[in-house]
Image (cartoon, rainbow, N blue to C red; front, side, top):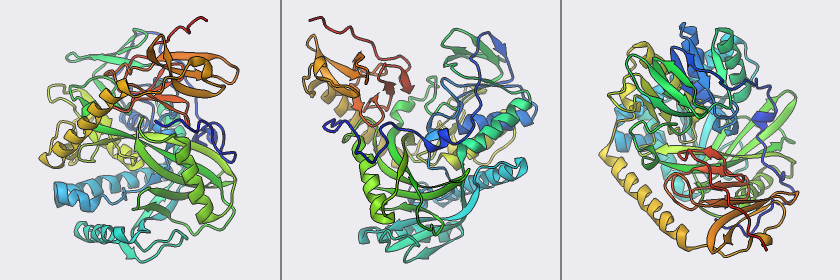
Length: 517
């Protein structure tokens, strides 16, 4: 990854900070310090895990929710938080690759998920900026107008309420748009903090700083083994940890690709016409507003790329900044953050039993940047599977599925890309010395003739790491915008100290002793 510019422009916040995480009161919990027995153990304290825990507690199940860090600080806390079944231009593609029946099921699952969130907000009286709005996908480039037209025809085939427009209410140069009526936006962490409260009030248990490492399968009980060696005995175990926290027999690192995307929170200085917007052009642009606790912002998102690959990540923020100023005029950039998302081979999440023989083990992953409804759909499906209730979406989301088209083509492409980076990362790197790395700068350096990663804190403290990813041996690259080391092969991410931030890696990067002069 190009690190020629290691600092943001003066108008960007120096450090990343998600608006969703600083503007809501998120409860804190202690870590697990003893063995435990429950009905269901859920690993992963994001929107899927919390929603499922809440649903199962309502059914009288004793549930433990384990989170490796702090709840809601993963992808859930770094979203654009659109609660919509309009997931880009997906329905024409699903019809072409999977057929009308599966495309309609995917829409129905996400429509029902939207309704579930709507009813939950109303039923619990949650103050989370819930706002009903139409969702637009628009094309500013003439070459993409045909894509809009094909998607509109797909809406007709699937019975999706909406319309086709020649323009949108924003000055974004749109030539055509497809609109899905009656969608929504909300404040995700405010919503989920209330679900956590309802869950714990029902006897649910939450443990933070508790990393699930593996599962000891048994009958009728299994055990989740934590990093500290404690065991959570349970009948059912669910991985909701973004990437499955144990192997699950599925080689998911080879069946998904990983992308990062970026967002800015900008002070809203002009009247906003309403609506949520996503461009069909490349680079993608996402636009929505938020009003919460007296603060009015625009959330501008986009700039996706494969994790660990591409230009210096500050450039992506700067591109969003340029688009925001061109479209909405000068405004203060209050927040900036980024997210990581997994996409499956056929673009439908993997939710359910990963292996047919493991009747009481489940996973949920691969939401393709559309976690707000896909997560609720996943939680509703998993609840039914655990309770033994028939669910018509089980086969659609089954992790064990495989479609000849498009799965084979995507699988071959993904793994060819991995092979390229596995080989290239060992050969191509600039030989910089550790002492050349300045304050708040990170770079690939040479230590005793070998490739290493260096980051110097503002106070001068130097961190040196082996840059070989602990998952499968690819070489990680420095991400200046987030101050992390990112793997271009399967998307593992590490802090500048080497700690694992995102899987599939489980072990930290090895520290290296600084050479003496």
